[in-house]
Length: 244
Ligand code: IPE
Ligand code: IPE
Ligand code: MG
Image (cartoon, rainbow, N blue to C red; front, side, top):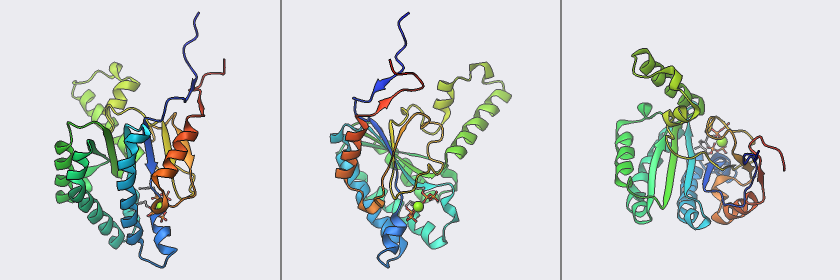
């Protein structure tokens, strides 16, 4: 019997890269500056990385910007981050569209300010027809929260007789998540030296490769990302299989 393909030399480039953008606060604090200065510098890096990603073979880029746990921070920092997101969307809208970037958001929007929610919906529809790069930004996102929301929705449909629980497959559950039809990430990168996932893509990253770099996000350049992607190409992904 021909063996199913269970191992894969990752010779093909990482098409979906997810980044836990961490270390903005420390970057600023190290310089004696307010944490928000680090977040603003982080946004500049996002712009560079988004521009460089397609030429690195990346077709999906998912960025963790604000977690369901980040509300624990000071009001000043939370409001400052929300203002930065709104500003980014407004300032980048034309540039993203020009570069063929489709921008979407994952996370629970219901807790965000109505104005921010409108900006998010606006840029999603403005860029919906583009596909040179599929950029997903996670705001008020938590992997567990996303799974809970999907599970609740499915349970409700089942209770109302609109969904047969026997039809619940991994594929159907994946589609019910915020990420919908987006493929799972090949590679998750976390900056700033922390080696944890902090509730990012709990379901989707089950078989992703991970790379951790000491670099704080405001110092993370497209060149470092390219070096990490080159390393990815030498990894052997086994998906539970054994070496032939
Ligand atoms: C940015 O880095 C990630 C966000 C939550 C916006 P941090 O703000 O967590 O920076 P550090 O980890 O405190 O240095
Ligand atoms: C994870 O970073 C969330 C984002 C990058 C948006 P945190 O800085 O919030 O994570 P912890 O608290 O160190 O786990
Ligand atoms: Mg952090």
